[in-house]
Image 1 (cartoon, rainbow, N blue to C red):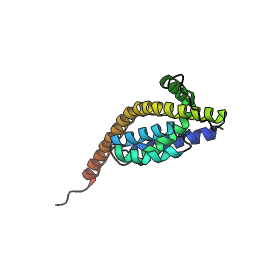
Image 2: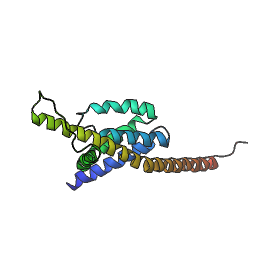
Image 3: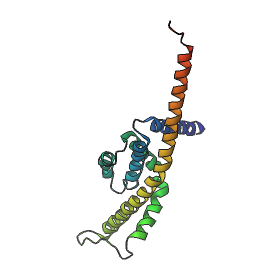
Image 4: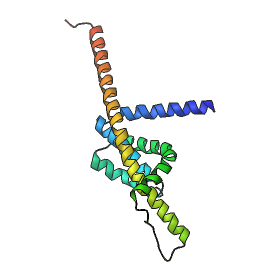
Length: 168
């Protein structure tokens, strides 16, 4: 059990490093992560069809696709924690008397459709809030990481050039 947990932590660290090293500026990496997280929050009630929404959002908002996929996977990890929060958010936003009634469907299916609609609405709101919340720390950490990486490269270049013999 402990070995599995260690492997999982290593996997998360690897994904984090992949995220930081992805091509594009800090904005595109952070935006991609935020888009992936946003879409995942309402992906379950749409039965996976909202995943297709990642591609046009990446294009329109100039995000990074690999970081969006990392954000999507991260969203899957935290979704069980957000499930009830999504429903509570939808209950706050939607009117109390709001209902779905299709006369040709049984009451259970109408109730199921209403629940899914609440999960979609709450998931969109929570996903947007989480995307904004995660955008800025990721944007800043990617900037710091790239700046440090650039400084290390510059320092290595100076050391390499100093160790080369001068050509006369």
